[in-house]
Length: 544
Image (cartoon, rainbow, N blue to C red; front, side, top):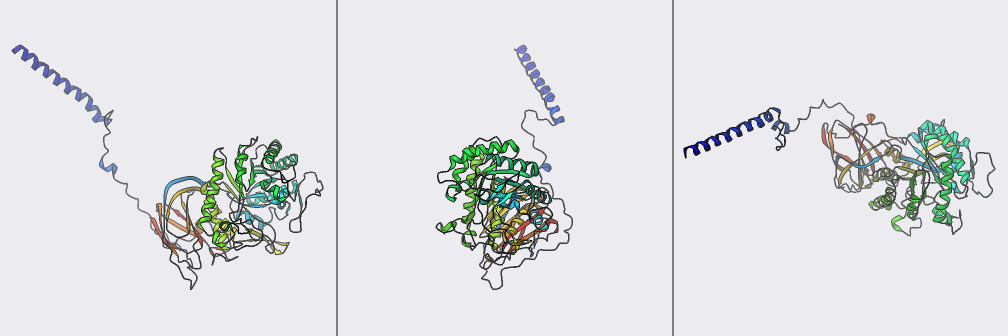
């Protein structure tokens, strides 16, 4: 018994000693190195979990505050629910591309001698839109424009009239236009004639375009709105989509042989049925999907929601319809990895004047159209314009020439829509940030993260400037703002013509560094409170 008990005691003591040694061997190195091995993570010390104290800011600098006028004297001042805007650091996945804002001109305008680099009026118009883009197309390309590099006479089948004459376009015209592009650091898109079938001539035009414009030539389109050819007399009544696709392939081959690096932009139609067939057509060059879009096209008002009325122009319904239409095109293009451009757009395509023409409301629409389109994923926009005189010329054009009818005097006028485009273009480029918005009546808020790390907030306030009170804005930013500037587009009423101004002047916005500070700016705070007058588009910039 004793010997058995002794052996048991010895065994217990040995096991205990072995356990102690094992614990010492394992735990001591762990305690020294801090490496938990496969054990559960060791919590950090409480001090490491405490929030880092905010660094004190330097004293607020002296600033000049922006002074904005309120509603017109004696107006009813209908109350508007306060606008709450919260901007985080999460991006939407879309961006505002540099050069998204452009003008669309007729192809015959390539022969207009005012388009040259030593014309300060034209250079100023383009530079006012940032790194602008000019698209040459329109109905003239298939009806009144004749390209020739050999001095051929204009064919007798081309017909024009006094305000819209037939014009020959030559390489010399390209060289002159290129001086304008260089002076304004602008880009160009060309359209070749499909109305009069001639792939070889289109290839020749592409050849000279690529040689003269170089990298500034960003696309070539075959025909303008070919879906309308049968009903407008450009092609026989039986001509249709199948014919277009067959001819497109021949044009694409001819163009690619002469300008292989220039993308093919198309179909340039106003029919959704033409989008997917264009995307699926095989061509040797890169393709970009394009559509033409005029939201208010029911000129006879048979579709009341699409009639060119002021009520439709400043309605949430039209805003949402526009976005839905674009998304349908974006969905088609996304399947093929293509971009979507809208090289021809405007409020309305109806001939003559209508209640929206030249109005301040069209300027507000222009700002919102650029920003909402870009946030949707559209890469380029061309607002259809005319170089004809303001007197007697197309009233919906953002620009026009001074002088008596058909007698331009060399000056150019910026109409209300142009100033709206200039406001949007002044933002440059940036990535859209997610925005939470509530209240504010008919307002649209956008946020951009700029290259310098600042945040730009754009608020398009489409409440009626003649009757609505100022809206209280409660803005939450993603950081503590050290500076907050603003620039603003204003007008006395939706229907006011030639009365739209930017910071009180008929001029493009000043650089951010030269702008006044937001009234009531809260230095060093992520929360800002201020008021905005109805019928305005405001660009705010905050640096941290």
